Length: 149
Image (cartoon, rainbow, N blue to C red; front, side, top):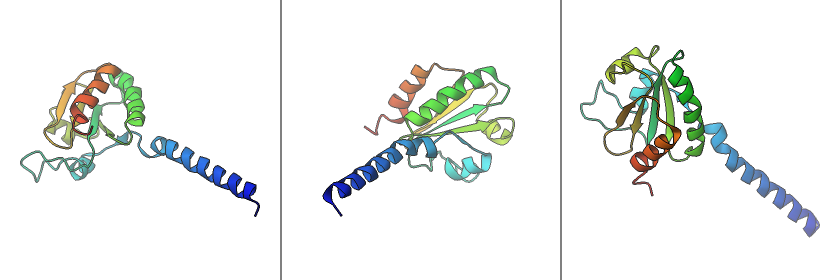
C-alpha cells in the first residue's frame, strides 16, 4: 500500500475511535430508573445491614419523584443534563415513589421531589424540594466529588 493511503486509513480510524469516546457517555450513562430490589443490590441493603455502607464504586444521585409532580418534571431535564456532564464520575438514578413505596417509606419521602446524594464514603444527604441547577452542581462538586480531586 502507498504511505498516503495508510495514513488516511489510520487518520479515519483515529477519528472514529475519538468520536466513539465522546459519545460513550451519551449512550451508556443516562439516568437509570431503579426499583427497590435494585436499590438494595446496588446502593444499600437496609434489610440485612445495620449501618450505612454504600455498595457502589462511584457516588450516586437518586431522584425520588412521581410522574404527576410539577417540580419533579422541572427537575428531570436538569438531572438528565447533569448525568451527561458527570457520566464518568457520578451515577444518576430515579425512583418512582408511587411504584417503589417501600423505598419511599424507608427514606420517609412524604413530599417530592427529594434527592438523595450518596458519596462513596460516609453518610448520604437527602434534600427536599426543587433546587436550581447551580445548587445541584455545587452539591455534586463539594459533597460527592470533594475527595475525588
